[in-house]
Image (tube, rainbow, N blue to C red; front, side):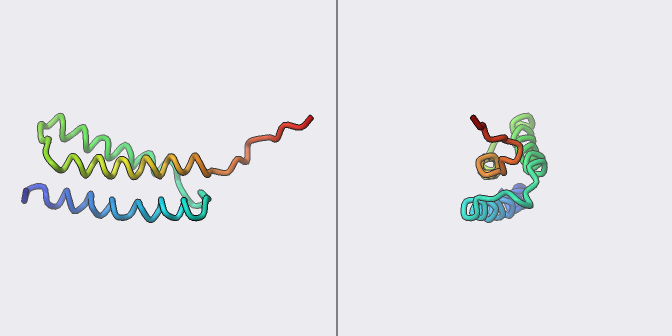
Length: 94
């Protein structure tokens, strides 16, 4: 446990930040100021951390924190596409 405490603390810090972004998007239904590329990079980081745990045969409870963070970022990305501006969509006129 003690060897993973700092990894857990790091993952918990990130896990507490994502709900603020999610709540803001749900409340405002806007995506201004959000970098989808940044979200994808963070998502990939959590995926690589998860894979590292499996490859290094360190499958323990820490893996659940990677799954939690991955799920939060994925939900944030889903909201981005749900609320992103439809600037490029041309209305169909008769």
